[in-house]
Length: 133
Image (cartoon, rainbow, N blue to C red; front, side, top):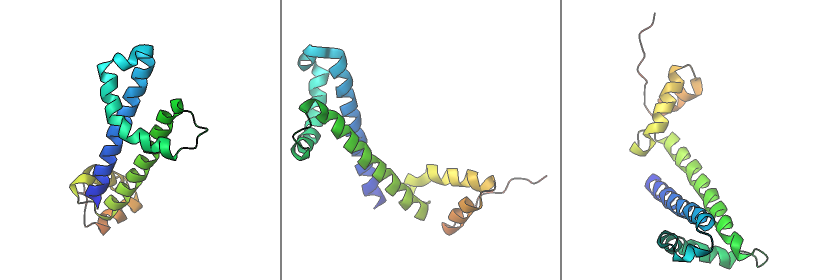
């Protein structure tokens, strides 16, 4: 399940960055943007995402705002995937995709955070105790 969440999150990141790049080129290239090779490449990447959003969006939303709406929708789904990934990782910190979170919990436990220590104990991870003075 974690692999699916990580892959979906990565796809959302790619699509979001492509939309962001397309938006920057929209501003920088101006009226000649359709002649720009990079803009056309980004348009090819983002068109499978923009078309469904245009289909489900109400008609009072003008076409110029569909890119921003799509970016907002992608950001919301990305945040949902991020929260889902964290929930899965808290239950299984030994997964390689959760290593950064595990390191953070170890740091918090070593600084005295009992909740972090409880999560580590639930995952059978025991932080190394440093020398006591």
